[in-house]
Length: 210
Image 1 (cartoon, rainbow, N blue to C red):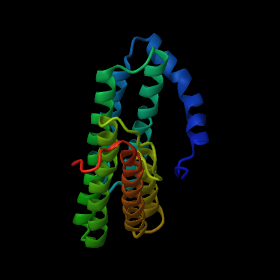
Image 2 (tube, rainbow, N blue to C red):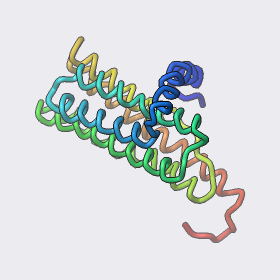
Image 3 (cartoon, rainbow, N blue to C red):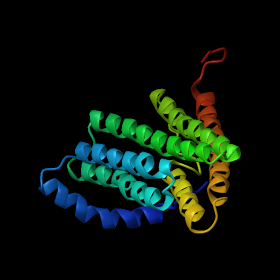
C-alpha cells in the first residue's frame, strides 16, 4: 500500500534540500551535527511552545526542524554513505523528538482538561514507538519491514496539521487529528507485523520459538 506522503513528494523535497546539504558539507558541518541540531529544534518547538498552548508556533518550528531528518540523510549520502554510528544516532534522535512532540501534546491537552484528546495522544505516543520498534526488530532478525501507511513523516504531518487547525479554526481539530493518527498508527503496526510474519513463515523451522 502506498504511503500517505507520496514518494514523489519526498523526491521533490530532496531536490530542494540537496543545495543546502552541499553548502553545509563545504562549510565542514557533519550530518551528525545536523541530526542533533534538528532534534534540539524539535524539542524547543514541542516543549517550549506546543506544551504551553502556542500550537501554530510549535507546529511550524517542529516542522522546520523535522525536515533536518531529510537533510542529514542527504548529506550522509553525498559524503559517501551513512556510518553505523550515524544511523544509530539518527534513529535515537528521532525517538527523542517524537517523544517530545507527543509528550508535549499530551501535556497541553491534560492542562485543557481534554481527557479524550489526552488518551489519543498517549496512544499515538505508544503506537509511534511500536511502529519504529517493529521495523528495527525485524531488520535485526534479517528481514525487511518497509511497509505501512503511517511512517514518521506522516505521523508528524498529521499532528502538525491538527495543531495548526486547532488554533486557527477550532480546538476540536487536534483531538480529531490524534484519533485519526492513533488509528493509522495501529493499522501500520498490524501491516508490519503481517509483513514480517509472511517472511518468517518462509524461513522459520516448525516448532521454533520467538
